[in-house]
Length: 227
Image 1 (cartoon, rainbow, N blue to C red):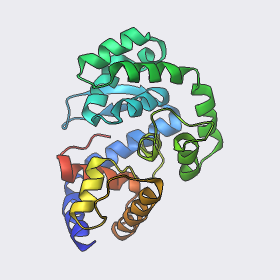
Image 2 (image 1 turned 180 degrees about the vertical axis):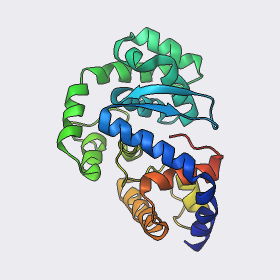
Image 3 (image 1 turned 135 degrees about the horizontal axis):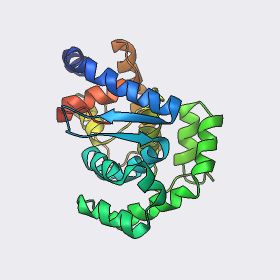
Image 4 (image 1 turned 90 degrees about the horizontal axis):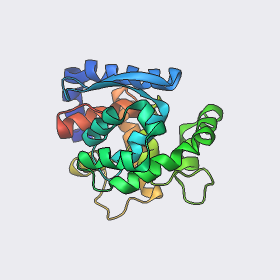
């Protein structure tokens, strides 16, 4: 843990301002249902997003990249996610080189019919860990197709929840490379929770949230602060 703490302590002062700006954007999205993302200087992109389009963004980034998802989200726009046909969405998603344009377009269109149900969950349940189980675990009637713990955590963090870890490939590699977590073939829910507990201890020692820690680790691995 010492090595990870040393690395993060060296990075936090350098990019704290950018992380705090992103956190304000997430908080506004969770509070008001709409926000303005500005990714400069890391990507020359800024745009408005609402909660539904952010859910679609997290569908797009599963097994893909945040930068690609950001570009597609900007191109489609909040109204496009609600109104474009499967064919129109597929065309835009494919244009940016996504590996699964048809599948992602179909999932986005399917989400439209479930949005009131999902929005109701977000309004009623404020425990992010309970919410994550509801939208990610197999067998739950509220499960979102294409969501596991990572994708569900990603969505919840981006709408203002601060205490769930997003174990994407960058965070996982950081944990392995710094000796925080062993190399595993499959990230089961049990292992996910073990990793999250380790990251929670890192947060406690640094005095930051899981939401912030994710962005700092992302900067360590990519030199970018996206979302």
